[in-house]
Amino acid sequence: MHFTMIFVDGLGLGSEYNNPVALARTPNIDRLLGGHYFWQEKNIRNENCTFLALDATLGVPGVPQSATGQTALWTGINTAELLGYHLNAYPNEELKEVINKYSIFKQLAEQGKKVCYANAFTQKYEELIAVGQKKHSASTLCALAGGVRLRRREDLLQGKAVYQDITNEIFRRKGEDVPLAKPSHAGKNLAGISLEHDFTLFEYFQTDLQGHKQDKEKAILTIEILDEFLGGYFTVAGNLDPAVSQMALLLTSDHGNIEDLTTASHTLNKVPALCWSNFALKWPEMKSICEVTPAILKIILGNS
Image (cartoon, rainbow, N blue to C red; front, side, top):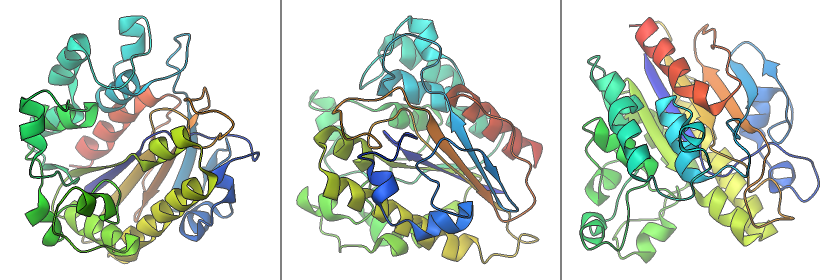
């Protein structure tokens, strides 16, 4: 089977007030859920879709942060509990040790599965890392721990990668010579990439950036781009014969943010787990972001 994980940074489930997710037009997600529910803490199960609310606080006081949340998400280890606090931004040495041992990419690769980090990186990425002007995020560290090759402009031009903003606008601003992409086309590319691998991760973090900026119109657009992107993915994945190609997708986050523009910081809200498959798949119960990696491993390795 081919499992796609879409990580949407800083996407929580909140109230309707000042919530770009509630205000955005999301026809593709609405069709999956049977209504405009993507912003609500709600459990939904229908023929092809399961929608759950996951705890991101990990039982530790304080506001959830990216380093601990993302490491927990891709290792299954309660890293906030391990450290005793929520760590912002980039993994420290303790979290790097967890990643090097328990990365979902590494665990799957060791079982002979083909794994892929679909995001495109700029040509200067390693150069900036080498001189200390940039650090690896938890997602990148997890991919590297599994021996994954980071994708570049050439891959994107061949439809074998997607840039983090989906449309390539920011990629172009960084000096990369690539055309602008429609979100639906990028989504189709992600589905094609997924068909070549057992596990594929794509990371979209414009949601977290726009949540911090508190710009309602740009935040709404960010959610609508995500929905159109998913529409493109389902145009391909949803029309495949499951007897030939079994497809599964899980979209989730590390903490809340964009769903509450009354604050520029992260929130204590639960995060969504939007689960879809083109075949009869019984999704494992998940109540916390720590349970995401064990669930994915169970699905992929249990359906070998």
